[in-house]
Amino acid sequence: MAGTGKAHLRPDQDPLVRVEDLVVEFPAGRDSVVHAVSGISLDILEGETLGIVGESGCGKSTTGRAIMQLPGPTSGLVEIDGIDLTALSPEQMRAKRPKLQMIFQDPISSLNPRRTVIDIISRGLTIWGADNQTAQARAREMLSAVGLEPDVVADRRPGEFSGGQAQRICIARALILDPKVVICDEPVSALDVSIQAQIINLLRKMKADHGLTMAFIAHDLAVVKNVSDRVLVMYLGKVCEVGSPDAIYARPAHPYTSVLLESIPRPEPRRSTPRPLEAGVAELPSPIDPPSGCRFRTRCVYAQPRCAEEEPQLTAIDADHFVACHFPTAATARSG
Ligand SMILES: Nc1ncnc2c1ncn2[C@@H]1O[C@H](COP(=O)(O)OP(=O)(O)O)[C@@H](O)[C@H]1O
Ligand code: SF4
Ligand SMILES: [Mg+2]
Image (cartoon, rainbow, N blue to C red; front, side, top):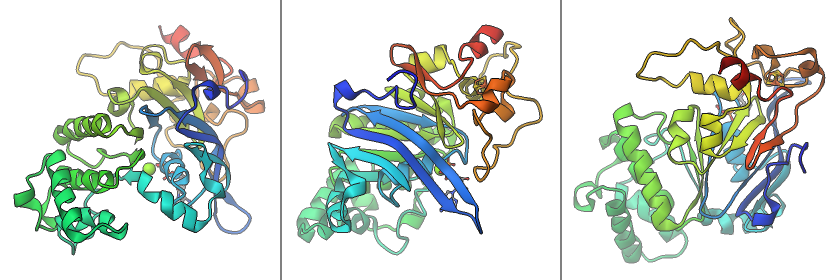
């Protein structure tokens, strides 16, 4: 399917998660629409972690929520384990919920401040019919698994915890339901840098222990580097590039991926490579009226007239490396 927007999907590998042509639009006043997500396709194999990266406002959270049907997309297919979630009744979807969990950016505000930790974590099980004693015993096990001492924290309330501890509680709450798919939406973005690695390591450990399939959303390529089996770069509701971490970090082919890589803080002095971003065009264009052709063209130093006329489609440039750009090697060729 090279040359189409779905070229990067792997039909031969029977992915656990398959998303095709996902579109999410929000009404924005009279006669206008926010094109938050405009035809994204992705797949995630069982046990795989897909990193989803792009700057704030590019549609990452909307994509994550649409996969989880919170709410569902405007159009497109969301298949998990062969079942199209968009076709399910509310009752059928409710039955699927425990297997699909999300972990959010702001852990403290996603926990009910009035409940105790043990209550918050065990509640997922009691809602689904477990007796209190069983649910509490399991919740204590989960607390230990996420590195919190049950005897110390069980009866405290969320307000008494740091952001990192609160995120551990959120992880325990999500995983007690034994999910298959977990979407982590910027799970460390609100945490101190010193805590971020601890939570990332915990998520990696929990993924291995529980056999999870994950999407890991971040606005920064550095954060997803060590957790992702593949990385998908988004810009203004579209996919720019998909590939292995090796391809994305060592051989980026989309000018926007190069911009994201350039913005990673590095301890050593930078080489003086030209940044593939038009000077003075720092803002993401409005998703109400996105640029024609390639949506990145208003900020791309390599833009040509063709970029305004024709939308670039995701195309294979190597095994498991796909890019949506008319001049894909430009960034590496000109700055290398
Ligand atoms: N409920 C909503 N109503 C209107 N616009 C929305 C809504 N949710 C998100 N948006 C808009 O959709 C775009 C994508 O948002 P979002 O998915 O939150 O981006 P990201 O998570 O990448 O920062 C943004 O322009 C945002 O303002
Ligand atoms: S298609 Fe054109 S504008 Fe878009 S990233 Fe490639 S070179 Fe830049
Ligand atoms: Mg977001």
